Length: 347
Image (cartoon, rainbow, N blue to C red; front, side, top):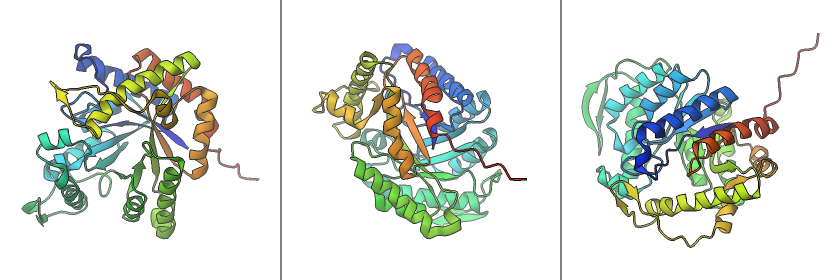
């Protein structure tokens, strides 16, 4: 089982500055590359101070320039916010500049505040996402493409330059519902999912849907991967673990507001709202724990056949603590889930 660090920008204080914020994220990516993580991932969000990254492809190129081998994933790009005729070309250039280390994670958008202010109301986002994805994949695969749909109408055109990798970088779909995971896998997409606050059975159902689809595809599905995203952090002891849980609870007082609440935002800052969920209840749905507990909690993910766990470790901890967590996880947790070395041929 592989691991990725999600470079999720949390910006609770404007005085910290976007320059320092993204310098921190780049430092995390460089450390992850050095320590052998499989990937780092960047979000796309606009206008708000959680998961703040309005230019994920641009940042992916910056990460590639500062690292050597780590994959760079978008988790995820919100396709309905872009014009696919422009975005396809930007994607090809980013894939070239990242030396083929880019994986394009895509989604429809989840936060009404953001989507509506950028001209894509939530009720239209699913249909626009579906058409946008079809337009994007066709533009990357074919030349002289014309379109006559609900959201795109254009005469024949060819995206230039042409993709270096046939069809462009691999695409990973953000899907939660098991039936959706099965359908998207059958279409040839990698999958990113999360149980969010769901129970262990939901995770098993998500994984089963993916593996059933791969089995039905035979050789065509051999290289598809399943990534599971979780909020996670290494607590050095009980006191440190409690402090990180309290920071996560504060973070979720904003996250819940923008994801499922009223969307109260002022000057780009999401208002913290009282939460009905206790810290103890939140603890049950997060991976904030000591090293032995982390190993135990990740064991069922490896046993279920998850290919990659995306660790979201940015919810308010200091940069020093975050870097320490990245290093501790790599040195004390990852070796327990390393892939076995290939067997030596017998002479």
